Amino acid sequence: MLRRKGFTLVEIMIVVAIIGLLAAIAIPNFVKARQTAEKQACIANLKQIQGAVQVWALDNNKAGTDAPATSDLTPNYIKSWPKCKGTDYAVPANVDTDPACPSGEATHTLGTAAAAAAE
Image 1 (cartoon, rainbow, N blue to C red):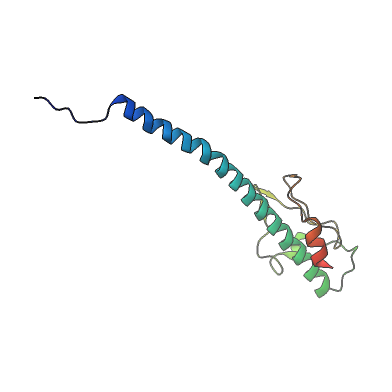
Image 2 (cartoon, rainbow, N blue to C red; image 1 turned 90 degrees about the vertical axis):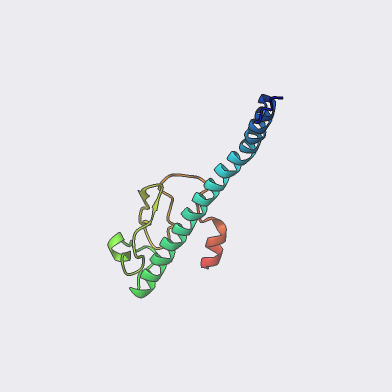
């Protein structure tokens, strides 16, 4: 009597279908998690820049209309200048201006919560 060991084609197809179903559920969640992480990192960088500009202004008795330069802020207030998706952030035009994301993402902003916290 001959006994064959192994999986049938139907069993293998069921396993492949289950793996495909799990991938279809997991991949969009991974993409969304990555986008959320990028957004949160960008917002953290914006807060870091804004904080550095504010401390620079206090330390140097600058008014809200004074404009800092990158050389004014690094390395004394920010160790290294941050980037968003490989592009350097622009220095705010003046102390009262919020920094902006260089990638132009509409959701990468400090928003009203940071403005309220700064007051």
